[in-house]
Every structure is written in structure tokens, then in C-alpha cells.
Amino acid sequence: MIYVNYINSLIQEAVKDESKLILFGQNIDAGSSLSGLTKGLSIQNDSLIINTQNSENSLVGVGFGLMLNNVSSVFFMKQMDFLILGIDHLVNTYNIIRQEKPNASFTIFPIIVDSGFEGPQSALNNFDDFCSIAGVEGYSFTNIEDSKEIISEYLVKPGFRILSTGQRLLKEESIDLKVIYKARNNQYFQYKKGIDATVVCFNQALPYGAILEEHMHNKSLSASLFSINSHLHDDYSRILDDISATKRLVIIDDSKSRNRLSDRFLSEVLTNCKLEQYKVISRKPRVDDFYPNNDALDINYSFIIEEMFNGNSKALIENSMSINKGNDKYPDKNIVNATIRKNIIQMISNGNAAHSGSALSLVEILNSIFLSVNVDKIKKMTKDRDRVVLSKGHGAACLYAVMHHHGIFSKNEIESYFKNGSLFAGHASHFIKQVEHSTGALGHGISAGLGMAIGSVSKGYKNRTFVIVGDGELNEGSNWEAIMFAGHKKINNLCILIDKNEYSQMSKVSEACSIDPLYDKFIAFNFNVIELNDGHDEEKIIHAIHSSKNSLKPVAIICNTLKGKGISFMEKQNIWHYRTPSGDNLQRALDELKRGIK
Ligand SMILES: Cc1ncc(C[n+]2csc(CCOP(=O)(O)OP(=O)(O)O)c2C)c(N)n1
Ligand SMILES: [Mg+2]
Image (cartoon, rainbow, N blue to C red; front, side, top):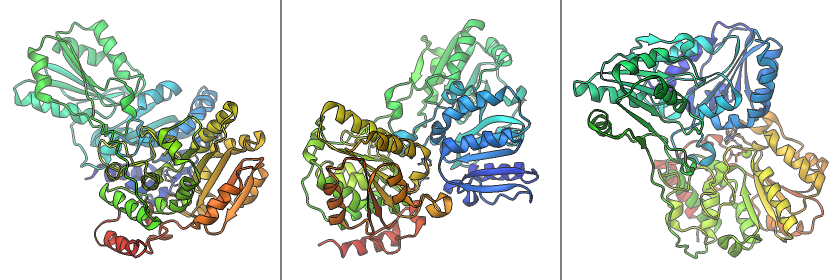
């Protein structure tokens, strides 16, 4: 069975008989994004399933509030990096209540996005860091047996914890390994007992450990195999005894944490055990980790075995990925918006990516901005350039295609979109020189743009900062803090453009959590507001940008747009938030666009 379906069945089982349990998160009714993790949940009459908006900080607070009111809940989250927004609650609110040992249960269940392509904001495979900052219990799992033990034990159990697994594993067939020992509180599991070496896996690395054990077995060597499931330190004496007997240790850790449990474990081993040989297979923490890499480790098993049994050096083996930084040729072309749309669709289709609808609604907004700014300064990245921050970073295909249209990126570069090793990742990435800011986790662009705008005022630059947000994105509370501050300080070189296409990830914004009346809200926050009924009318957008140049307050331009604009069967069809155009769909889209390209 595919692992995501298996985990889904465990969740179903764990919640079905619970009374007065609240399950919440974005689109959890529909399976929690498209992974299917929470699809088809059936619950008791007095329990609730609540589809929420994306506002992770507040929702973590809600979970703790429920707990304080003795109500149990599970918060399902699409990506672990979104939980960063909730870190304040994880540290502070939880600190207040952790001493009380509440009877209610609160579990956060995020997925670690470790399959690359998504962009720097999503490259957070740092579960150890999370648990160590906040001192919270965290468990990861990788296979049939440990998932079953952990989910059935902890999904609904008094107290608070985070449970997680990796996106890469979810897509694969479930791994079936026989457990021969389970440590107290599910801290770790043992899968094999051997005499020649001990293999200890951290984070989501067990599948590599199992392959290594198999390779050893084929060479008539036997290894003990352990996987550490808890991300907080524990008593490892049984593993230390095993290592003392085998005298050979391999540690495999596929996380990107800087504060790794495996480092602490190794120092404990080196203090307590006499080793003949050891190897640590992990990433050396470095800035490249935050490039949009696939987090899979590339392990040369024969080499490791050779080194373990015949090598001299006790070495750290680093796994590195190559990054394609693109080339610097910028063709100078004139392209109409239909061509920009054609490029977007081809980029998304070739990369097998998503977010067509989100990119298509942005075309005129972004193109109008680039038609209004000094592109040459952006190309050269002068200090006084106008700054363009695409806060809804999942619309990156449009940003890249528009910047290509303005001669900033080459065709080759944008064609590498969403391909392994390319910097042109699925979410806007500032590892590309002319992209102002990395976004993708929603709710970050306005505050970063506000800082840029204030910075310009302090330096005396005459430039403006443009931030483009989605309407669903405005559900994030962090936006409103920055909006309030900008209005209060009258930061008039900040211009926010809202792509108001009425849809969020899967539902309508008005259904998930309404942001209306948006015009009045911005007025109340001391902004000058311009609302455009047709957010695809370039002349009007450009006029709004120019006419607000001398505003004494920050500016908001509300653009009423169509999600999927320009391709008839994508317009207002939110399935194109995720679906990749291919085959007949692709052809139909390109045919429709061809008519607009003359
Ligand atoms: C902090 C955070 N929470 C949740 C998500 C998941 N997410 C990706 S796109 C999206 C919908 C955003 O809707 P909107 O801003 O209206 O953009 P649209 O796709 O409609 O252009 C959501 C919730 C995210 N990227 N970041
Ligand atoms: Mg929207």
C-alpha cells in the first residue's frame, strides 16, 4: 500500500471512536491538500472536523486554547515549515501550560517537505531544530510498524506533541520491516540484531539503513539496525551496549538540522564505547541546504562497507547536491501577455508542477509593475532599485516568465523551472540574483517589503517597494501586523497589490475565512486604496501605480482578478491550483493562447 494511504488508515482508526475530538487544518475534509492524509475521516457525533484557513500561528494558539479548556484536538498541516509561524506559541504558550500536564490532547501533524523543487521556504527538513528550540516532544516515523505504534499511541493522548513523516516516503510503497525491540515511550525501534556493525538512523533515514544492512548481509556480514523516532534525547544504553559489542558504527541522518540529535548521540558513543571504526553519513550544515534540493541522500553502500571493514580513517561522509545556477544570457524580446501565459503553462507542464491558476491571475499585475519600474536598475541590482516582492511565492512561474519578458532571465533559465537542481524552483527564490525575496510560506512578503521600504526612506532613495499578495494569503495574521505598522508610520513608498481572485488553495476565500470588506479594512489601517474591478486591465493598473506615486500614506491596489485567467477551462476552476496541464489539456490551453499571440 502507498504509504500516504496507510497513514490515512491509521489516522482513521485513531480518531473514529474518540468523543469530543476536534480535527482541524486546511482542507482536511478533502484530504489535507492533495496528499490524501486525512481523506474520508469518520468521527463520533460529538466530534468535529473544521476546515480552517491558513493562519498557522493563530491555529497553534487555538489548539493550546482548546487544551486549556480541556478539549482534545489534532491540527493537520501541509508543511512543517509553516509551523515556524507558530513558534511563538510553541515556545511561550506551551511553556505556560506544559507544567500543568493537561488532561486534553493536542497533536500537530505536519509533513516534512523533503522532495525538493518547492523552493527555499519549503526546504525545512529540520525536525530536530524544532524540538530543541521549543523543547517539545516530536516523533517521526517511516514504516508500517513504527507508524502504527506511534500514531495509535500519540495522535490522541493527553499532552502535546508533534508527529511527522517525510513527503518523499508518503509517495512510495509502505516500508515493511519487522521490529525486534521497541524502546520505552517509542523513543526508538530495533529492526535487526547483528554482530559485525551497528547502524543507527535518525530523522527519516531508516530506509537507507535497511539497504545498508542488506548490502552487508549479502557480503556475509551482519548488522544491528536501529531507528531513533523521538527527536528529544533519551536513554540509549541498549544501543550503546550493542555498539560496544560490534565496535563498528554507522550513523545515517538525512535531516538538515544544525542542532542534530545524531551529533549528541555520537558524542555519547565516543565517551562510552571503544570503537574500531565509525562513519557518519549526513549533510554538513551549509548554506546549500537551503537551495531547493531533493533531500534524498546519495549513498555509495559498497564504499561504506569497504571503509567500515578495511578503511583506516574514521571519516564523515558528506552528501552534496549539484546546483545549476543557470546562465547569464538575457535575450531581449517583446512578448505579449498571451506569450507570457504560454510560457507559464509550458514551464508548469514541463516541470510537472502546479499553481497554473495562481500564476495566470497575476500576469497583468506583475507585467504592469515591471512596465512601471526601472528594469535596468533591477537587472543591475542597484541599491536604489524599485523592489518587487512576490509574497504569494507559489505564483513564481509568472514572476519568472514576466522577468523573462523584460529581458531579465533567459529562456533556458525559465525552462529549467521546477527541475531538479534548478534554482528556478516552484516558489520564488532569491537565490536567483534578481528575485528580491524568497517566499512560499505565505504571510512574509509584506513585512519584508515594509523593511525594505523603511530602509529606502532612511537612505534617502526615491524608489518604491511593491508587494504582491494573494487574497487567501491575507488570512495570515502576520500580514495585518505589518499593514498596521505601515499605516501607523505612513510608509508611503510601500505599495501592496492584492491579487483578489476569490480562491485560496482549494476553497473560496469567502468560505474558508472571509477578508471582506477589504477596501474598508485597508482604509481603516490608514492606507490610500484603489480598487480595480478588472485586475487584468494593464492600463488601469499602471495608472494606479503612477497616480499613487506621491501618496502620503502607504498604498493598496486591490485587483479583482480571475484565477486561471486566459484559459477558458481553468478560469475559476480551482482544481488548477494543483493540477498539472498535460496531454489534451495542455494542447487545448496552448491552442487557446495561440489565438492571442500575434
Ligand atoms: C504559511 C502557509 N500556509 C499555507 C500554505 C499553503 N498554501 C499554498 S497556496 C495557498 C493558497 C493561497 O491563496 P491565495 O493567496 O489566494 O493565492 P492564489 O493561489 O489564489 O493565487 C495556500 C494556503 C502556504 N504556502 N504557506
Ligand atoms: Mg486567491
